[in-house]
Picture (tube, rainbow, N blue to C red):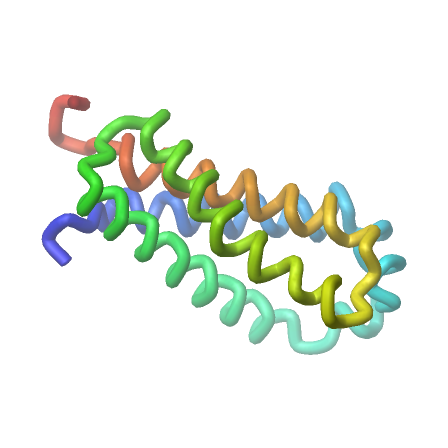
Length: 138
């Protein structure tokens, strides 16, 4: 756990949550709800718990990226972003695709959800690898 950049983890979590709120709450809100078959009332349910669980999920991803970045010696912004993109494509998006291969989810959701994940993983990887407070960047 010593290899984890905890300041980077916290900053990446804040950035990820803000990105998610902008992405799903403003930019793609109407399109995402329509493709998901949801209404404003469905989404407005218990938003507090949704945000809490979303933050927990993001935290797990970000801590995993931070641990992996430390173990692989990724200590710069671009190396972290590339790591985040690799992990996203190889693990997150590959697993996400099962919803469409075996399930009946609307394939119109792919660009919205996959776009968010690609950006979120790349930003999180860049932040946990590249953010250095009180230290000179390598």
